[in-house]
Length: 461
Image 1: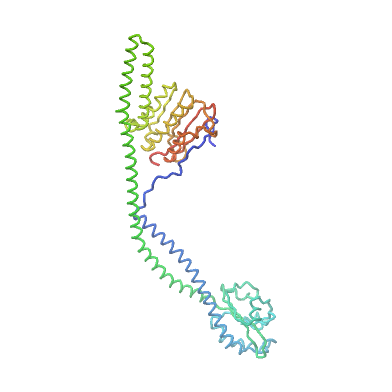
Image 2: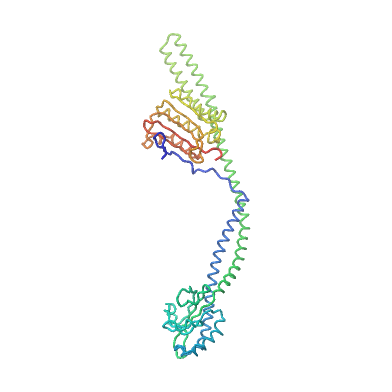
């Protein structure tokens, strides 16, 4: 936690999250954003449809090769299988090989195998596999136990696929066939995966045309709706800004009217009464009626004090010097009455810091200073007060204009119940700082005085 003179800063308000009302984006920007959004949706849909087309094409290709395998197994392979094939008869294997090469392989099949139930390859168009024995998988055994056709995309990771690992994925289909004496064999084929990609490309081209047309039509239909909505939002925002400005102007006019009524009415009447009562006191004293003269003079002093209080209230209601002579003169008006309470004041206003603030934030500085000086008079018991407005490079980011109000009074514990952090004036300052996007901090403890620090954004922020 940052400290000043050994006293830690306590953050009373932080308006960093408060953002001014943002203007609505222009038509060109809105259309550009709409187009980019449509492009993003198109890319996502294309990627998704490409994946979906690939999966659909793969499923259709697996079904096609399964149907082809069933037809080949029933009409071509099973009639060519001889019982002697199980005993390794070369003539039976050669006869089956001729049938496979003439009628099976030309149908997009890249490998054919016949398995005995114990996992021995009794025939393969790759002769190096014949006679080898491999462990049949669960799906292969299930196809023999419960005769059925199974088809899938093979990952070719098994040892029996040593001679198929050359062209990527293959479509694997297996089903049982029977020799003339009823011996069961597993007929397995591997189909080419190439048609899957061709079919996926065809599906994707068909989907892409529909998607592009639909998105363009949606964009054309949405554009006028969005622009009309933007126009209506812009009109509503301008109306709201006009109402807010009218409310601010009305408040300013009303404050000015009240200040003028007080100045021209009660203040002038009280000034006249003060002069009349003072004259009466002087006349009584001249007649030797000293005791009554003292009472009347005391009443005259009370009236003059009331006039001074009302004039101070006029400055607070409508600080004309802030608009006419600038922030430095208005702050000087605020500090001047402290001399009547025996408090020395040092005022230091940097012209560049004052001019860096917008009129609204100058009002915030004026009101925060007023509340801080009120606390000094009412609670601090201070002998000296320093009011400083300056540009500070080490201030919080984006808030380079800093107001410091420091006194050498009794200080207080900000965490104690009923302390300065609970005063109405402190809540007022916190609200002002938060609404202006400023940072309000307090550094104080018993016996070490009090320092208020307000960091504000410049007018360019």
